[in-house]
Image 1 (cartoon, rainbow, N blue to C red):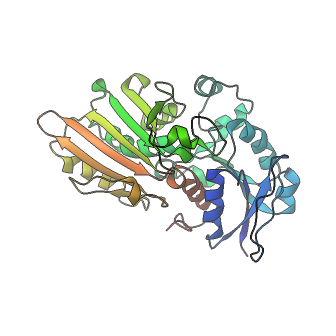
Image 2 (image 1 turned 180 degrees about the vertical axis):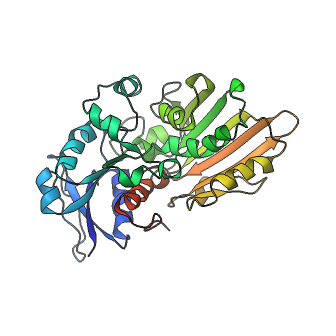
Image 3 (image 1 turned 90 degrees about the horizontal axis):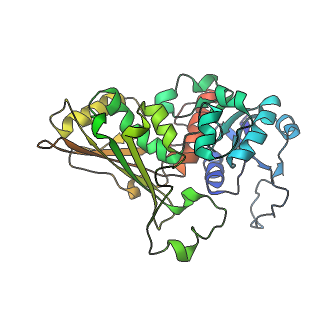
Length: 335
């Protein structure tokens, strides 16, 4: 018998991607939970049986026998729904930023809003499996990481931990994302005429994903410069990360650090010296691809990190967390 799991926010890009992944998972059955009273029915083909949404409520958790609920909803909605889902007996994977940061003060600073579920903020496990795997299986509530911090932390943390980054020179992260990262809600900035044949930076110096990088990679805000930019394509994130290296003599030294750190990680792929990843290699996958360049004469180093923002940056990683929480093989439904 398949384990039943609920999906709230299934009409958004991340939620729809999650439903697609869950349908091919051999151990679970997705149940669509409708949380919006004004949502119209999506058109469905006549000759194919498709699941019908049920109202999102604690009664749906018990009535549908849901072991876990995904919240692919805005942060304020997740704060409202998560306590009720947990109280009804389901575990929760939240794809928003509602529970990623550890204090209400930090949340208010970066999200510019009050947090009204502080107990859950303190309880939630941060769901980056490559660094938090021991805590996730026991968690009632897992906060799925942001897409930008996923790509950044997988690139930066092993190097900081190995003490090969000269933090006094700072780390610069130049991050570019497809438009789906902005969500499905219509806006002028993400409309076709604004995005096509265009390229723009946004949230300069105050992007809400920055504290996740600081928290996970153990660096100070003064040592990290992050700029997010919008690419005129649907999906994918490519981050070019610049820093001064120390205690190394070649690109192979950096590669060896990654190979040791990610030797047993199924979703991190390391490119050989001289080769760099691109978006085409990671789109529609749960992989994070890393490649490096190093200039011996100056100590300048560059790491390129690439992910699909809707998969490893959202739905795929959420599924990875679900597998850990429900005791399934971590790669189930993702390879």
